Structure formats: structure tokens, C-alpha cells
Length: 215
Image 1 (cartoon, helix red, strand yellow):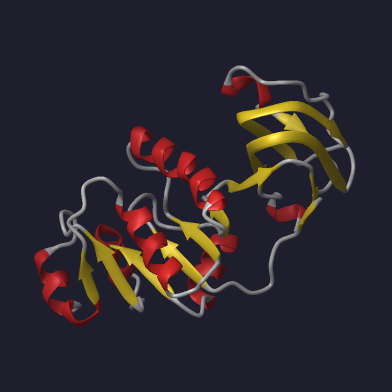
Image 2 (cartoon, one colour):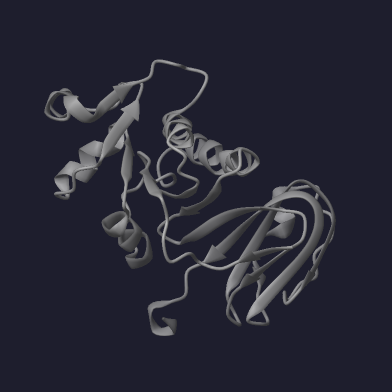
């Protein structure tokens, strides 16, 4: 059984080229990571906010020419068009042995890019990463088989199946069942401080951030 709690430490943060982090939880990860790897276009906003990454990676199609020259010593260009820049960053971290990863800035831009970035979390989990994606509204966590995770009463929870079967839950307002469409597992709600899910296979959990008054 997999026990999920928010980690106190991670190995690295990836900043993708979507909406720049603005929620305090996401900003905390950005400002306090031991290693920050930036998808190439994301460095444009990062530099405007006075932050320098440890590394920039990508195919070079969205980084400004000025920043390409400014950060030439930490920019790795990977021309492979079979992977997106987020996955290029994950592959780099994989070679460095960094397994506990937070992804920021992966949503809020083009919807097809956002869906692709989110769905790739399942692939990263299968590669052996402990990975979470923080947006400006909540976080996505890929999980497999039986799991439990901490929550709070009233927290909004959504579950997206990636072929999981036998889905059952404890601690959710609406009991889970096998899901044939992504919308079916959305807009659920925690009724306890811990939620348990029983399943065979992979699924993605989305947890809405607590409101400022709840923190």
C-alpha cells in the first residue's frame, strides 16, 4: 500500500512553460528547491522574476535569443521531437539519479499542451519517479493500485483512471467505481482526513489547494 503525504524535501523542481507559479504553495517549491531545471521557454518569465535556474533544457524553439546567449553556459539543447521539453527535463534528472520531482508551470497555456503534460505523469511514475505536479489551483499525483493519502474534510478531489479496475474508495463523498470517462471521477469531496483507494492499475489524483482561511 502506498502512503501519500506532502514531502518536506525533494531532489529537483522542473519549471515548464505554462502559467508562471503564483500560489504560495507552488512558489515555495520554486524558491526553495535544491535544483531548478527550466524548460527552455520558461526561463523568459523566470528571469523576469529575478531567479536563475541551475539548468535549462529543451529544443530551443521558445527561449528568447537574449536569454539563449545570457544562459549559454547552462543551456542544453535537445532536438529530439519525439519528447516534449518537460520529458527532456525528466530524462536528464533520471540520468542524475534524482527521483523526487515537483513540476510547476505545466498548465495554464494551450490546453493540448496542458493535457499532454498532465498525462505524462503516469509515464514518469512507471519510470520510477516520485513526481507531483503543482498548478496555481491544486496538485496532481499519479498513483497505482491501493493507496492512501492525507486530506481534510471538504477538500475537492478528482480521480482520473488510466486503465485502473476495481476502483473503490473510503473517505470520499461519492463512492468510486470503474471509470470509463475522465469526467466521471471529477468533483468528488473528502469526508475524512484520510482517503483510501483500492484499485488494480494506474490513476491520477487531483487535490484542490485549501483556501487561505483553511491554511
